[in-house]
Length: 310
Image (cartoon, rainbow, N blue to C red; front, side):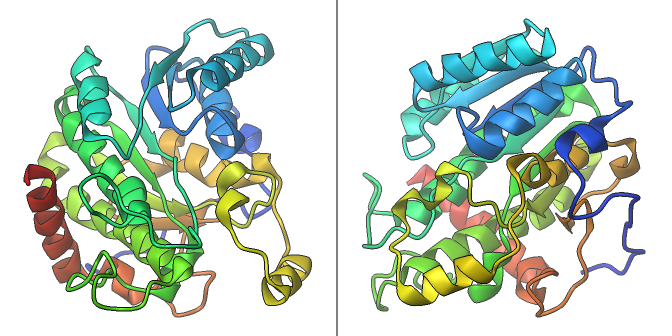
């Protein structure tokens, strides 16, 4: 990873989406937020809309998406809030979404995700479902929207990762757990590492297009649908009871900050937590060295591209 001065900001773990976007004018900017029918996605979309952005909620459940859009318009007064269907585990759905997009795209928040599926599940292509959804789906979507992002001249891509990336690198030799025992958290972790590696390589490849690509950790938020698949154990319950949880507004703050703040102008290929660039460390508060490995990032991009062509 290239040495650079770590970006610190006036914000912290207690900052909310409203606080980090205060004074930011996104009029004339167009944004897409995936998984925006609930939780962090809805809050991220609401904050961007509150600053005047034209926001598209990319969702699997259109009814839930329309309900979220109506709620956002009611809260912000912004009528430029749209809903479009997107299933990140379905390549045809991703292609249809990207093909339907017209004009420049200034902000893409790759927020949707699934976590810790208790049993190994595969996509129609035979890919482990968390990797297929959390990484490959967003990778395909971002590639499909590349020209729209490039047309914006200064577009920002935000990949929502997780501190859980520390648990596992991307095991490129056995991504889909064909030759090793399936573990829900290892599978989730490698998909979240992939989100960071995609930002590292995307930043390098697309610098000439003025596309900024960064990854973020939102923090621990219990009030979202992400935990719906998690198998509760006494050990996990003890961790939940001892964790300092963020509100949804605090959880969305880092995504909104990286997507919109002038403090991030020109900043790319980095990982943010608590509204500032994280330190490289094995501590969960920072970013693991394996998630910033430029060689792994390049290899993952090549492997991902090959998978999508298969």
